Length: 153
Image 1 (cartoon, rainbow, N blue to C red):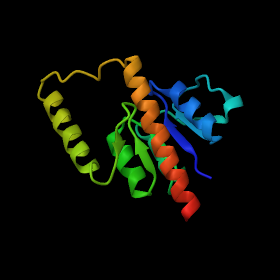
Image 2 (image 1 turned 90 degrees about the horizontal axis):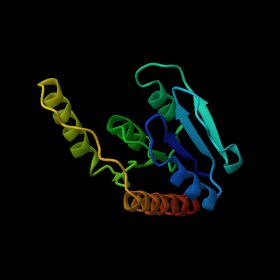
Image 3 (image 1 turned 30 degrees about the vertical axis):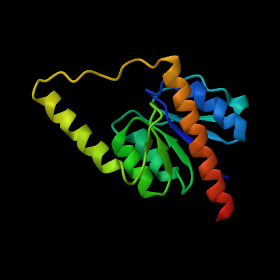
Image 4 (image 1 turned 60 degrees about the vertical axis):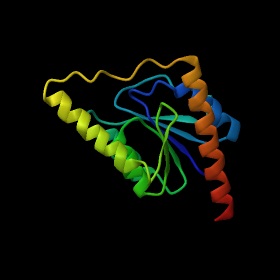
């Protein structure tokens, strides 16, 4: 049985994740640095970790297994989860893959250097209903693929 892990502190698509997870009856680990509402009747469990850099990321990496699905906008966390053969999708609906993670890390590093140099790079735009729909479809596809692979193993 696969599970879905949410890097939850800044995740704008938690409701969409709950819908997909419920469709497939998958457990959900909602990992955060602070308490938040989690619909336990949908199979979601809130994991509150200590404050600190990468504490939630470290918990996810320590507990994720091959085939599990991770939702995060954190590129280094995505890379660490891919190393453990998990499936990873960003909150924008774009999957992180072995082929795309190098470019994503390089872009992240470039933007960090620009910010350090005083260039304003801005944050991500707010999600539209179309963005949320695209995310839901991408997550559904990733979950179905992971379930098929788990059945074939």
